Length: 390
Image (cartoon, rainbow, N blue to C red; front, side, top):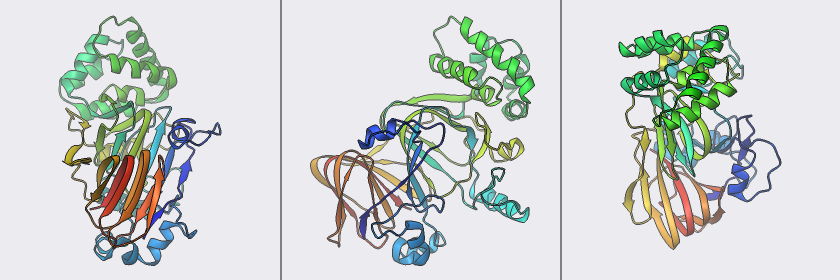
């Protein structure tokens, strides 16, 4: 089967009220539209033309929908979740667990009797959440720890009052100590440090670190007593252009700041937060999953596969993703297993070899191809992402 999906929009407070409506051509209603979910996650599954949720259909017959091999490999669970993400305000400083950490953390939360929908529960499921964000326009983010010498250079250039101990820890290569100390600080002790950082940025007259200055000044203003502002000092500040990407494996500390993107992740809702959020923060648990290896080059670009088809190579074991660019022509995307196709520009018709069913998609719409179907055929003029199970 190849069918169009009806998807749920999540209205988180940080979402843009205009970005997704502008993409889809739907009149905005004034409310934030943060994420549009495509997939079979139990909290907001896509709905099929039959009226059944994709989650229920997968649960009733995993092999029929996912294909026998995918169903067996992922224990009957749909392996990935795709989203349109539109950030008007910064998301939380966060990281996601590995598979082993998620299994252990989920078991601990279950044994403690914490309800799965409780705000103070760390692990909603036993899955990891490796994710990729592909920009659909300029997109700002904090991604992974910056090389220590660059962070020290930034602090030396700004010279904020009260940051001497933090700077010395970084000079000594003690990144984990620095991060843990910052994140464990209470709001009363953080407030004067954030104010001092803002003053240092205001008086800085150099030309280096323009992106860092821009984001830090905004964070200082919006989160005057939040440890996440100081954690942002330690992270790579990136600005993605259209179709640039960042891949965030387990342990990568990150925060999306502003922009519209297409996001794919393993089918999990496990988020460990450390700041820039009013939601539950558990610093010891966050630190326990963090990868403290600095990340020199966080930006990922697509690699050409064939004419009009490009692949984002992440090495993720849960999903693969390709971009298809059409100019009044047709492309065939090889692959098996369940697939979600999302159009992000123009109009694209989606079908599959071996079936006569096909659906026409405009920007923001998506289709589902069941696991047993053959390779996907796309035709039209526009751009679409094809996400498939590994």
